[in-house]
Every structure is written in C-alpha cells, then in structure tokens.
Length: 231
Image (tube, rainbow, N blue to C red):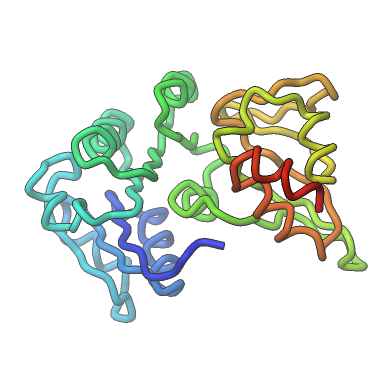
C-alpha cells in the first residue's frame, strides 16, 4: 500500500480537482491546489486542510509556491488540454515529479501523451479514484467483489521489469488470473500469448485473501517474484 503523508499538487479547482483534493486531504496527505480564479477555492469548503495557491499552473513561481520541489505527485485537471499537458510536462521534466497525471478531453491527444510517458485520463472514463491511482499507484484498487466476498477483481500496477512478459507467464508466476488489460485508455481481453506493453494496467481476478500478496508480487521486480515463487 502507498505510504501516507506525501505532498501532492493539484492544478485546477473545478468539481474534479476539489473532489480529488478532499479525498487526498482526508487520506492524510499534504495537498496544495493551484487555480487562476481565487473564487474556485470556495469549492473546497472550510474543512479542507491543505493549501491554496492563486496562479497559472505551469508557471514555475506558482508551482514552487505550491511546493512542487517536494511533490510526490502532480495532477493537472483544469478545463484546458493545452494547459494541462504543459503543466504536466513542467512538473515531470523541470522538477522531476515521479507521478504525474493529466486530464485530457481529446482522446487522440491522450494517446499521444501516453506514448510520451505522461499518464492521461480522458473525461469519458475519468474519476477522482483513477487520478488517485496515477498519483499513488502502489497496491491494489478493488473494482468488484462477489457477494460471498471470496473473489475480487482488482486493478494492479506493475513494476517495469514485468513489461515484455506474456500474460501466461505472469499468471504462472503470480497465481493470478488476468481478466483484462487497460492499454492507452482502452480495455482489451488478452490471450495467453499477449505480451504486456509499457504502461499497461492489469485487472486481476483472485481470491480476496491473496489480493495483497499478488499486488506486492507485481509491484516488485520480476526476478524477486521468481525467487520467492508464486503466492
């Protein structure tokens, strides 16, 4: 699971940005919200414990006032594609922020920026929970649990050493069943010989009592998983 208490910067205080800010604040993280319109901060309410910074989200001075130098993650969720992607690139390329997510309205642009290594989420599939996964990608995000509570479907992130492996090999090593894969924002049902590509997100079916162990295995380097054996 992700460690609590990291610093996160959100650009854009609309409905999505304010919801995301509240969720992260309630989870115990340090949060700074950036917006050009100071009136937008009213959406945060009086119970928001983070910081608000008035300014342009891709301006370095603004970002530094928001604490970008110490940020674990940066989410660009304003209403403009160009602004979001420019701010995301500044956070990634200028300040070296590891976890950067940009909200993109145009799905064609989203695919291009995914290929450049900047995770993007199109509005048709966007939720605050998905953005949180981009900022805090460790662990398993439960998507479905059967009525008995025995079987769960979880979204799981991979250590980069797993990319290039076949789905069949991953299932044999982890003991998990891969239900489907999200690739460039689209879901695909993999065959046993499907090879995972960089950026793929796995959606894994498993017993609920094995979920955390499988998530830890996939989050670790592949060589360590082979040495330890399947869960």
